[in-house]
Image 1: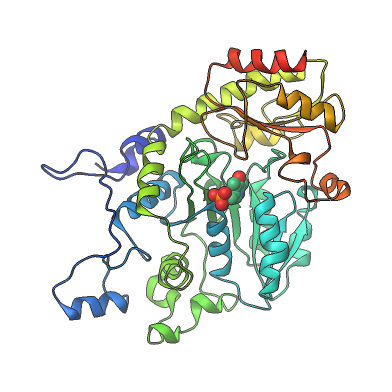
Image 2 (image 1 turned 120 degrees about the horizontal axis):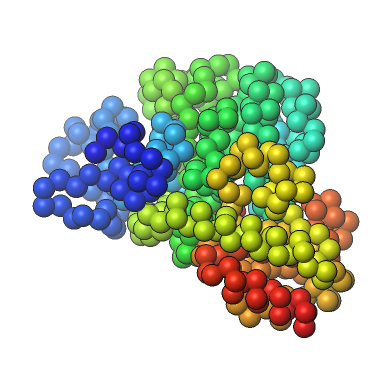
Length: 424
Ligand SMILES: *Cc1c(COP(=O)(O)O)cnc(C)c1O
């Protein structure tokens, strides 16, 4: 099958797995750490990157590769590397081109885990971050200096569901020679393909909609192949690597330089590898990705409209709503739907909001978003409880903020559950 002629939904179901005569119809699970060879010379060439092949699953495994290939196709990239979690994907994607003394520019509304990674943990290794707001994109070229390596943002932010103007961010980053990295976890490539808008590298937490069933953690880094890494700004890719007999990634691998180094150095040395079993499960989940994203989006819009019209609800954030401040951007970047996450404020204080959440029956209370089951959480007393009220406010979390991840159940049942809890 020549996948490039197929639409996204077809790629989700059948993408890049082409069994030969008599082979299993569904992608097999190759649950093996290692692979057998009969020639020492061949194995030597594998180590020197002179030949490609599987030899140890920390670097590459057929089941993991199959999933990476499917996601790369869906995003329209030249290739992808899987990681053990979304956090591992962001960490690996960034540190593949950053060393101590370097800095990055990031949007300040990104996922809390990524925010802490940049603000605190990478700082310990001498990599610092300048944070900018969504309304301060023009700052990007002004803040950038010769040690800046990349710009990082989210298509649709977690948890506040704000839409980034990707084209504008890409243009401003490119103006000063920087690549734009996008976390595309909430839309998935079904709802938005950031490379079409100028992004250069895409990362995902595959633990969310890609897996879709709250079973397997995973992450992925996808390379568009469009960014020219052969610049003095990226010595880790351009200069000779003494650990591979002085090979230069840009010289040897051209547009794949960034991706090859992820496997050859980052997975080899740091080991944030995805397990074949998780890859196999995430692939199974992804077979229904298009169906699920359509249903998540349709359900979330109905639920958001219900909440908007209810007098026990103070405010609703969902870019699919006509009055949402990000509605115009959502029409451009999310024309097929705004995904399944809604943020809203209950009319009441911290205690009342907690009581409301406790009264929900169908909507389950979990620290997760983006799976088939509708789930709810109260950021002020759960995910963001370690922040002061002031810091919570700075990241858009008030005592009465509720984050709802709308599943694929019947929308009427979800609305009925919210209604009984709101009116209790
Ligand atoms: C959950 C999440 C992550 C982190 O992913 P894990 O798989 O939990 O490590 C990163 N970015 C976004 C937008 C997320 O929602």
